[in-house]
Amino acid sequence: MKIFKNVLLAGFFLITMSVFSQSKITGVIFDGDLNQPLAGASVVVKGTSNGTATDLDGKFELTTTQKSGVISVSYLGFVTKSIPFTVNGNSVNLGQIVVLPDASQLQEVVVIGKGIIDVAKERKTPIAVSTIKAVEIQEKVGTADVTQALVNTPSVYVAGQSGGYGDSRITVRGFQQDNTAFLLNGQPINGMEDGKMYWSNWSGMSDIANFIQVQRGLGSSKLAISSVGGTVNFVTRATDKKEGGFVSMGVANSDYFKSTAAYNTGIMKNGFGMSVMLSHWQGDGYNQGTRGEGQNYFISFGYKPNDKHNFNFLITGAPQSHDQNFTKKISDYLTYGRKYNNNWGTLNGDYLSLRTNFYHKPVANLNWDFNINETTQLSTVLYASWGRGGGTGDYKARNYNIPYTNGQINFDQIYANNLTAPGGIGSQPANMLIRASMNNHAWYGVVSNLKKEINKNLSVNFGLDLRTYNGDHYRQVSNFLGLNGWTESRYLRDNTHIIPNPNTLPSASNTVTQSYNINPWYAFFNSASDKQKIDYDYSETITYGGVFGQVEYSNDKFSTFFQGAVSNQSHQRFDYYDYQDQYQDSKKVNNVGFNVKGGAAYNFNEQHVVYGNAGYYSRQP
Image (cartoon, rainbow, N blue to C red; front, side):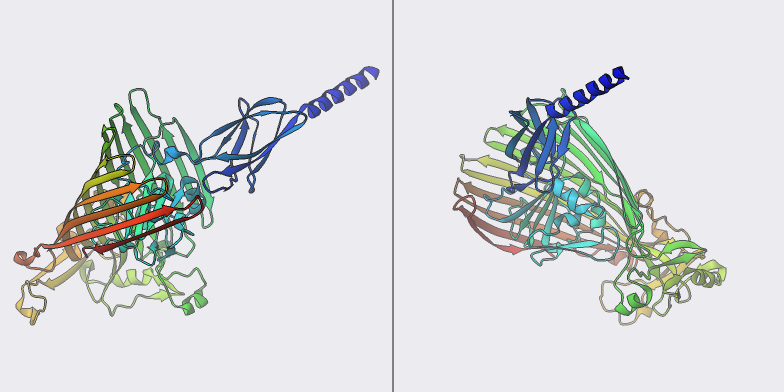
């Protein structure tokens, strides 16, 4: 019994000594860029696994048995900082510890396209600019699309449109998307035909974006014709210098699930490096009948043979399909509930949507940075994109009324009606099917910029912007709804816009018997033949060429720039469905565009800066 008491006393003594030998380290971590507390930063005693994270006020408290050593402070997007400590007594307060944004995110990680990407420097470039970093992108986006990263950005408005994944729009200073330039590493990504953005095709951007910069108003982007509303530049990770990887999984409401895996080899001794990111997502959507599914991929190869040359090739894409919901009367929502969507129903007990968007648009580019000498740099990007896909909807006569039961499409009734078609071949106005309106295109371009530094304050830029585009637009059958085929006829037009007597024109008819899967991977590799197209079939070819120049002066207090550009854009349309052979090709139309713009800024001190810019702008339709 005595021995047991002695052992117990000795154990209690050792525990007491251990507790009293521990020391407490405290402090506050600050974001040196925004001058505010940094929540969630990692604080670790170097050489150990002993660590903690800062709270919402940037504060941390760490206990250790060491009387001296080094703590390491790290946070995604910031330079890791090491702080030595020595404990005199039982605690030490390290006070305010300032960490700075990782400049490599703007230059070293994005090791390509330095003369093309056009990252404006805040408080120096005389334009209104906001930069959203990778950490903020992840915090804002969550399970939504990348447009949510721009929420709360000054002069930027983000709104949903069709209730499905990626159905969003962005306005900058009140200008629609066709008057705002959207760039990927300096590469223009607005639609060549209408200038619009379809964000469901860019759902992977939130995974690969290193930062997003918004230049409001007449920005300084190095394109032959920029924009009035502003410039939104998505800067992606190039081949990362550091080796490592990660795997992540996330879930959200409406059965949303996303998994991501990424790996970087780092820049190896032979100058090569590779980065790979793959992800998959799926969910049911907030509204009824807005299911979605897709993948994101990003592959980047880098090569730096010496200090003069730097190459980087990347390919990224986000194949996806999502069902859509459109605006309805308030009375419909009051009757069927706030999640009501009338674009879907069931066929033989299985879910079926009338409105589905499906698309796959891989984008590839090759960047080459050439340091000719210490004051002259040439940056060039060759890029290409291939889009395949479209959107589904009903194909019927105007007087064909779609049957509904309890607010949902009665596909079984449509199917039963189609079974009565003679020979199983449907036509208007008696029958209905689900069609897919296709938009297949190929887009190639090059942007090149030569920068010459005259002295430490003055620099000039000259460059060119060349693009060529071909888009095919037609309709094909995605679901016959019980039919074996579909037939239709039409008059073939000549070169007149008004047809006084259609009966004097030749006619054509066709019967289609093949339907096409709306899986985006299938659609990318399979297109309808000419004999299997319905309703319309036309193509558009666009060529674009422009040159630009810019002069920029800056010192510690004052900066100014002047830029000018001129371009020519040609359009030609080819209609293979509604016109006679000799009238299928339209005349080629050329349109000239140009802009001149300039600006200046003056820094009074660290807190006050005055800037202004103005320009004259003429853009092709």
